[in-house]
Length: 396
Image 1: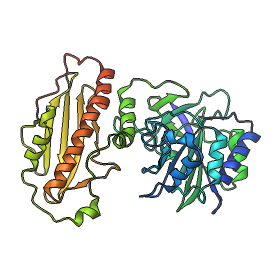
Image 2: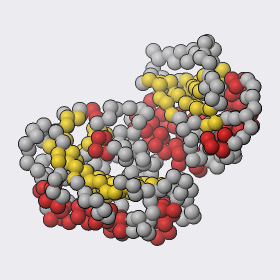
Image 3: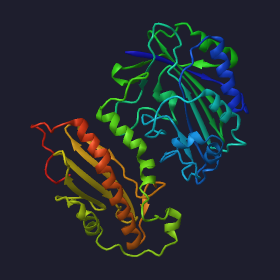
């Protein structure tokens, strides 16, 4: 069992992000805490990429951390930069290595005037607060094939790792959390020198009760290579799907909800038949059996002898489209949501047959990409199908 305490520090209202970072660095240096990797995530306001574009304009080497990467310095459309890696729900399928502290300190100094982002997130860690405990990364989240273990929005509840988390929101100001790994669940265990220094810098700080995390929730040891575990592979692809879709250059621009309301609604005809026809050239077949109204399902055998499934929810009256892709395996069904556009939408409005057809054509391209990447890598990690595993018939 692993034990952690989370310390929350009351940052004075109006304290700049750079000032908070400088105060943290000063406290860690005073306590002789060894320098730890530093990672980041910047997110722009909805519909804007001004902040991230401004960061890249000054620090071109950060362009590789944008969705799509590749080191290009042309204007972004996504408004997100991150080197958190695929184990974070705000990360991407890129290196999760640390980044020079000096550069990140300079960026912090430009927030929000020079770099008008909506959110800045820095995580320093794993930190060796005390000798005798090897820092490790673990999560309060149960191990899942569908959700990355760490959350940018709730790091104090998910990132159970000796670390410092600094957040800045344009609408809420700065937040500071420190996580400590303790030898036991004793609430009275003494504070490490680095954390004690932070308590002096931010009077009124409070610690949570010790939290016990099962050893099975250990995600990775510091500097350990990424394993071939199917859950980690799945989490990596799930986190990177938005960036991957951006690179596909989908042929159709799908109207957003408000734009769709301006279009004249027309009957969609046979929804199920249209779906089956759109995907039939790639080997997909209509599932048999009773399927609820507003739901549609197609399937195909996977190259490794398992089963791929596509489930569509089109509603009974609301004219929307949601697609879920499944790989049925001996470890259970693995699910991923293929977006039909970039940027993705939670669901797609289909007011007429033309828009509905465009959604399906885009989805067909994304699904083919996922077959060649996500499904292929998952099956390679799983290996041969066990003789006793039966994926079932075509009924979902």
